[in-house]
Image (tube, rainbow, N blue to C red; front, side, top):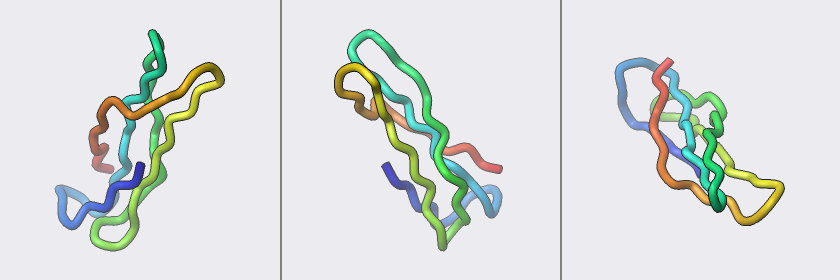
Length: 61
């Protein structure tokens, strides 16, 4: 997933994906982004089964 923020409480952020696969769940920390210019990207991957994003939130740095 990719998130671009136009405004926020600081200049830097990252997306934190809430990943799910069957009975397992975990979080994936995204890359660092800058407000208004760079997106933050996170990817849910699983060794067993199909993983998907169940939700996300923004971590302001």
